[in-house]
Length: 148
Image 1 (cartoon, helix red, strand yellow):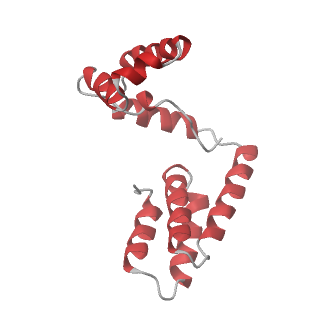
Image 2 (spheres, helix red, strand yellow):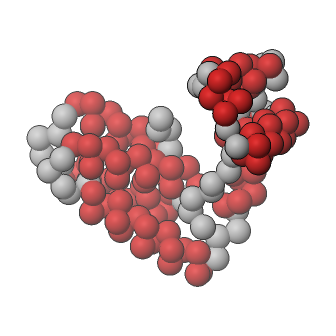
Image 3 (cartoon, rainbow, N blue to C red):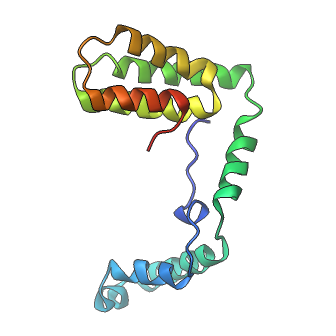
């Protein structure tokens, strides 16, 4: 499917594995950590240990994305068309945040499925009358798949 839900450790490579521990512990006090139920504490420690093992580079992530989306079939294409339709409807709402949201999703899709996403963004750019300059620039970036 479109959304790939993975642990943060799959996407971020820390320069120093101790950064993981520090950021993990920084969010709670030592007392809170000790007061946690033992099962939850063990689970969190296990996840933390696994995070240190699964460090990945940006190249690994790019290769995964390419592999994930290179075999889009007819059924999957129908899903993407439906998802793109929802995002396109966001482009014609009055709220700038909704427009940005639609552009953001289409920008992700443009990176691997430009045949669906780019024509939608092009129609939006062609028909947009009084568009904020930041949204206009964001739409142009989304068209290339380069969104934040």
